[in-house]
Length: 117
Image (cartoon, rainbow, N blue to C red; front, side, top):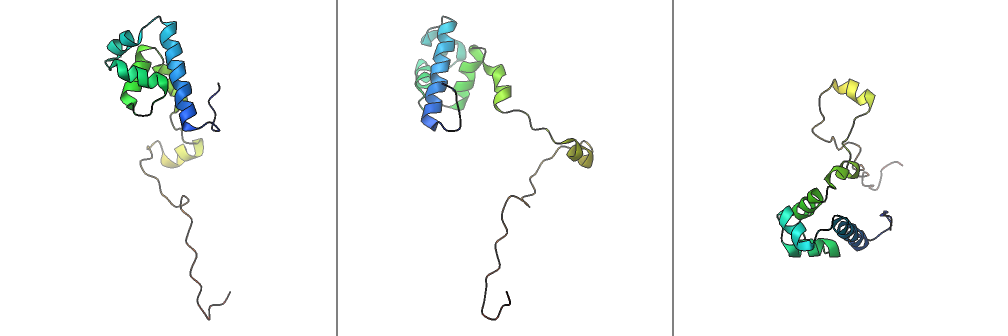
């Protein structure tokens, strides 16, 4: 199954869990062996593979590291790169804050009797 924005969160977690199970089986590892190598409990591996949401992200990362999948996270959340014009404007300085100017809509002025339209 392809992971798309139309899938529910539960469906995505189940698909990720199935993919982790497939990667584990492809490396001929038991859940217990994977858990030991990753430094997590066997129950954590079971939850990850079933798509349970109660697992911690650090456990997920440890399991992915053992399975050799951590390098693929670069594609999941790519590094933000400013446009060439933005880089010139900032002269190499890294952006640390959002201005918020365009993010929030300006609240309209309340109308009162006697105001011209």
